[in-house]
Length: 132
Image (tube, rainbow, N blue to C red; front, side, top):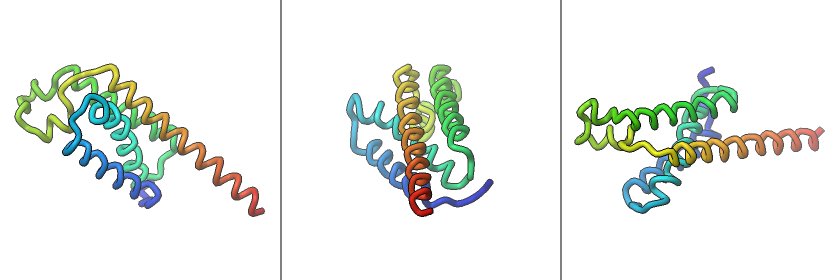
């Protein structure tokens, strides 16, 4: 089950750098809040798949549920309840405000992952068929 996979590690690294750059240099009303949420589920998915040999659907669903759980914690204002309002890392990781559009962004990110994964499976299968 534990297995390093560079095919997922490299995209995870690129997505992490992209997310950091967005957090540091972009403060708008679309890229940071929504594209950032699309990319974050892709980052988590690739990070999990980089170290664990898990099925695509289970990993995608697990990442989506995890993202929704974090959003639910935002709804409950966990950062405030724990007294972490001044802790920038906690505010960045957990977030501070619930939005239904964030859940839609997570769903879009997972959908992109699933489309990509299944296109790659079809591509690999067609190449295997051609080689034989």
